[in-house]
Amino acid sequence: MKEKEQEKIKQDIIVQLQKTPIIEYACKNTGLGRSTFYRWRKDDESFANDVDQALTKGRLLINDMAESQLISAIKDKNMTAIIFWLKHNHKNYSTKIELNGKLKTEHKLTPEQEEEITRALNLASLLGEINEG
Image 1: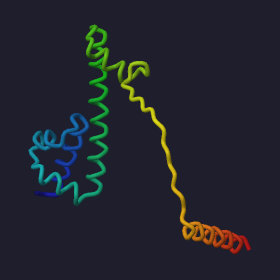
Image 2 (image 1 turned 180 degrees about the vertical axis):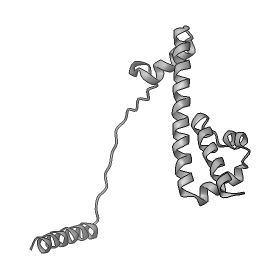
Image 3 (image 1 turned 90 degrees about the vertical axis):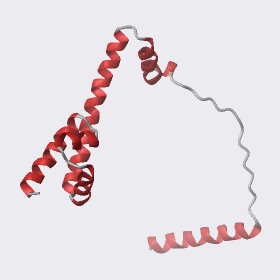
Image 4 (image 1 turned 120 degrees about the vertical axis):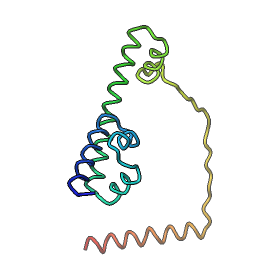
């Protein structure tokens, strides 16, 4: 495949992903094999970055469309849509988990451990003096 033709296909893939962020769909619509797509993505850092940006842009577009449909469903008094919206956007309707209990932590240091900690702290304070001086 010629370089110019390859660049055209890469650009077509990017445009497809911005509209529909599904790699298989973009490859099918441009006639590019998925293995070729992934090879190009692995070998061409610029193409990989463009793909990531296109996927993000495409997901944002789909999210906007889905939210628009959700709002339309709410306006049509669709209870499932209403419940979904409230569970995810209103603190009084969100799923809650309450945990009650007491933690008890008792861990006694051995005399050797206490001695090690004391020695480490003394060394740390010495290092602080050396670094300051």
